[in-house]
Length: 234
Image (tube, rainbow, N blue to C red):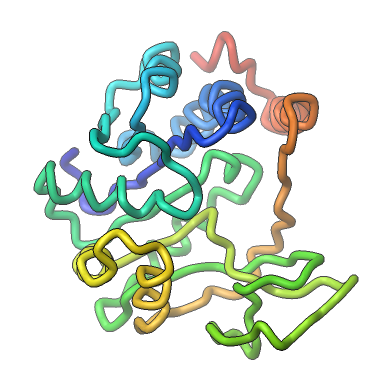
């Protein structure tokens, strides 16, 4: 893909519900990217026949099939991105990783992130509100790695919004090489970098734990975007 800042969408296949999400969200996501002039920047990564077929069903041509990885999930998706950059020799200075569920978010977050790229930084991200305690809780808008002793219950806290991440590619590759496939080491290395958190994206994470919840989410997206995911847009 020849673009300065690719938007990489990793299609996970770690569960039946995940695959169902991909099937339902892909047509909506493609329409959203096209409407906002970002579709040509998108690259879809997968490692299985089913996700590859979903891409074909939506006439997506910019697909990269990752080999040597049987299952892609939230924790190991960096490996597929690493393999893409190494095998394709993509020379993009920066790249964006984006989750399909980002379809509900303000698309201007992507443009805002690009506008804030500074070569002094290693990555750029957003925060979001979440009602839980989590190892990605932000304190004073700073990333803390050792907060297991802190417990915040029953009130919104700020956490890293991992559904959209903007990273200097050279830095990302160096973190992958140091980690040598170890997920914990990769996270530790990544968060040592110089970063900028662009405030609260005012987004509440929506999870689909079963097909019925996914359907509710998809129907909501269709209603607010006024898109027919079957017919698409002219």
